[in-house]
Length: 207
Image (tube, rainbow, N blue to C red; front, side):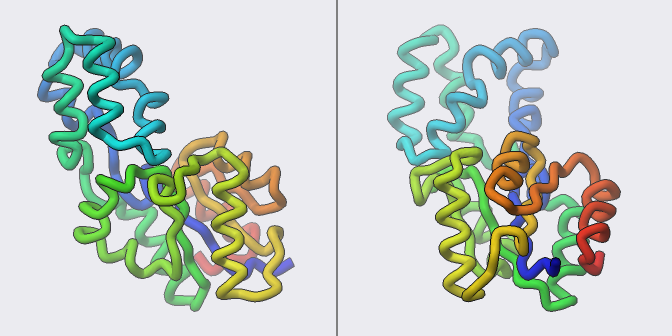
């Protein structure tokens, strides 16, 4: 078995993204901030925008549900860029070692189509992927198998005859990695650079 392509998730693997970076400024109390991010601007809501719902629509609905938190809700996307801490050096190093070895690299990310251009312009490493599936563009989100099928279709267009077992997918969300594995890919749950690189070496990759 030979790995012929590697697919990277972005947030948590290559890009340092966390709502905490913004909301620590807005809600200094740890318990209050945790409650807000768990019950108001929770990940289920974020995923709707990642899946293609217009930010204006999602924001309006959430403000209607929690009018007392309107300013904090609107800050989520008005100040979204303050949630991005930059690139993650370890993930970038893994990417660059694979790239230097000639390994085809692709991207598969849950990301709003409205905010992704900000990262695309600032982080050149994203533009070094052969192709990228952005959930907000295709209106599908991980771990839905359909978004993996779309990624596979694009990879196969560039690497005809490639098989699922010849693909590696790296994601910091265990459910997403498991979804890839269920389709025959090698899903790698990224918990640290050391463990991810060790798994890639087990698969014969030069990292």
